[in-house]
Length: 583
Image (tube, rainbow, N blue to C red; front, side, top):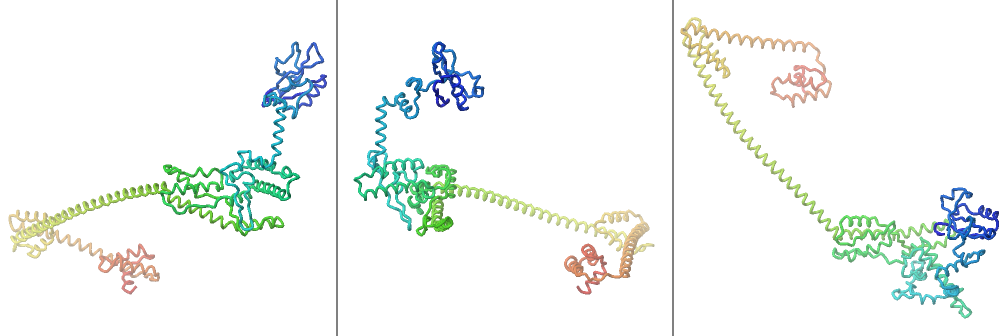
């Protein structure tokens, strides 16, 4: 039966069926191996044991219906049924009614498996082991793995003294002087167990041992217990490892070419003090060609680095001197305050070192130069674009100025041409007016002739815009065959001129009448007082800024501005009267 998969159950062959059923009732429910004994038909009273195995699925079935698998080779000839359990691995070496157990079982198994050829050899090995456990510290001299036999081991460190506190080399006492802070809990346990057995005074003191030697052996064993107690206490061991470790020596001045020779070992010396999860050594990039992303992550990690190292102060009080728990707590708080200053100094020192190392790291220097060149290139590109834009704007301005100059020249030429044209038209108008006078003079003295003044008035009525009308009139007068026709045409034109003047005079008269009526109605109405300071300021602004003296229709426009921006409707006469009265 495989012991890793099944649990063997070995029993004495039952003598009766009732006893068999009683044993089945006492068997644990979770038993995976069950057996029945087989009765031989020729010898019904002599049972023979046969191996059988029950699977986990079969355990859910009632035991009364179990069909147990077994090795058919173990069934004796003529066997009728399986009714019992198989024998133990030593069935062939033991009587049928006796089963090996305990130390005897193990001895027989060791012999059967070939570890020892005989029981005498096994007993000799056991006697040698007992003698080795009774050996003294001299037994270390034959053990090559012990620190005492390591030529490279320099021996115990001198005692560490800080104020009233003294620490022996506890690692050396425990035989872990080479491992020191790297020793784990299992190593400490094994070392203490080994040394406590070998260095116990009861095993070393004899009748011939002197009192001084007895005292030395007792002190050595007490030191071993003290070291074991300290190294198994996490807080005490942290303090001891802090003072046992070398002082924090970090280079603060080195050149770029010495970075990998000085800074990297300094980072490695800080790894043991990392207060966090994981391995801090993974964040040390010692490859000069490492990608900058890894270098950046390295300094991000070390910028947040926290050390668990303690710095006991020389003025600390001993916790054992406290009378009660409250006093112990007070002493712990005071000691913590005294250590805080040294802790802060150490943290600041590490921070300054990390910053200086990052500054001198050739990989970060290279990155900074690349970033600077990129910024300069970007700046140059931006400056080039700006210069191109300025040049384009300058060119556009020059083109616009040239176009403006051309336009100005064209306008000037056009103005000159217009002036010439106007002069030409005026000259033609004067010529036509002279023709009109000549035609009027042809009928001078004729009955009904309007006279020279009326003819001059008629000529003055024509301007440049009506030059063509004047020319047509002159052509008509030249076409007249006699003086009477000329007089008729002149009389007709003068009548037209008088009619136009009458219309203008009538319109002017109507406008004057309307203004007079408006002024009369406003004068009859009661004028609103000028008691609002804002309204006066609005009037001042309208008269002095918007519509100063000389503005056409000044007071009408001021009145309109007051209506738009003032609080009251004011007439032109009102604003004029108020302004002249003084603001």
